[in-house]
Length: 192
Image (cartoon, rainbow, N blue to C red; front, side, top):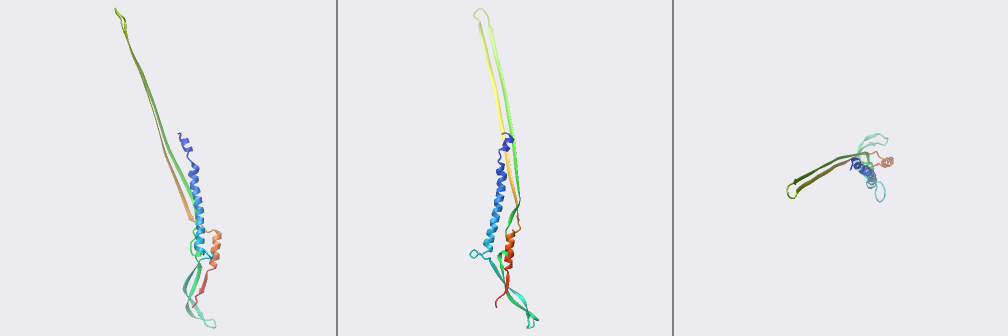
C-alpha cells in the first residue's frame, strides 16, 4: 500500500471530530451541572424559596436619652439572614481552548530480488572402427531460478487532545438573580 493511500485511509473526521464533539458535550454537561447546583443548594425543593442562613452576632449600639443625646454604647444581639447562594462560588466552567494534535508516521520498505541461472552441458563421443559404430551422447541441462520479495510497513499514530477550562463570568440572568437575593439580606435585633 502506498503511503498516500495509507494516509487517505485514516478517518480524520473521527480523529478530529470526536474530541471536538466531546468538548461540546462537556460544555453542555458543565452548564447543566451549574443549573443543578443552583437548584439543589440555592432553593428549597418543596417551597422553591431561597435557602437562607441566619447568623447571630453581638453589635455595639449607641444609647440615647430622651433628647437624642448619646449616652453610651451597649452591646446587643442581632440576627443576619442571608441567602446561601450569595455566599458560595457558583461553578460556571467554560472551555476556553482545545488543541488537537495528530501525528502519523508511516515507514514503508519494500525489497525485491530476482536471480536466475541456466546451464547446458552436452558431451558427444563417437567411436569408429571395424565393427558397428558406437556413439555415446551425454547431455545435461540445469536451470535454477530464485525470487524473493519482502515488504515491511511500520505505522505509528498518536493523538493528543489538550483542553483548557476556566471559571467563566456569571451569565447576566444569574447576576440579576444574585442581586435580587442580596436585597433580601436582613439584619434585625434579636428578641430579648
